[in-house]
Image 1 (cartoon, rainbow, N blue to C red):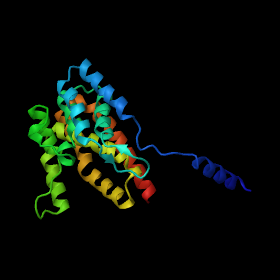
Image 2: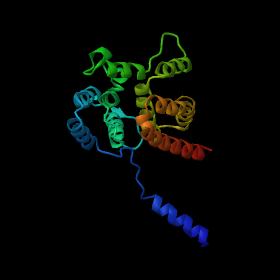
Image 3: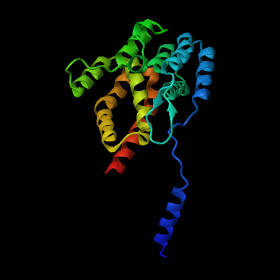
Image 4: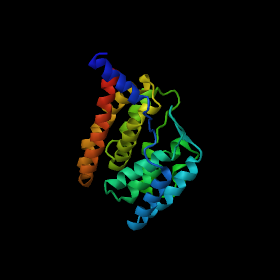
Length: 224
């Protein structure tokens, strides 16, 4: 056996023992982390939203081909991501927790347990299609509505960062390529816009951009 054959055999043996993790963090632990931060930083909307989102998402699951993951893991991850970057903005954290309830649950934006800023943000990040509207046109209108609103764009880039980071567990090649194209076209321009509108989020945006672009470029390499 040649050295290359030996290396290949060793690699295959090691890979046979690998397990994929489509859930990096436990939702129960994240829930307590969010509630602790909400209490310590005086974030009343966040304290209400953390339970409201869990109840509404109920038994919903994330789409993966590895294991079942409770859907609430997604908004909890977004909230913890922001908190880990020391963003203690009640409007933003509550919006992250509630960002999918109008689109994926039986919930009306006006009934959300939050203030007008959070309701407006959730409304902007809720994707809709008008009757007879093509998906491409709906996407364009969707992103145009968010343009210029720092909170909606921040929710969206965190949302996309998490979805891109998890696409290996539930996306086929076609969906992966579609996500990459959409991300480069609509998400990348948001980074500089948010930094201009909210300079205090500059370092956080840099971290989100770093993670998202790294995953996208890695995916492009393997797709080729």
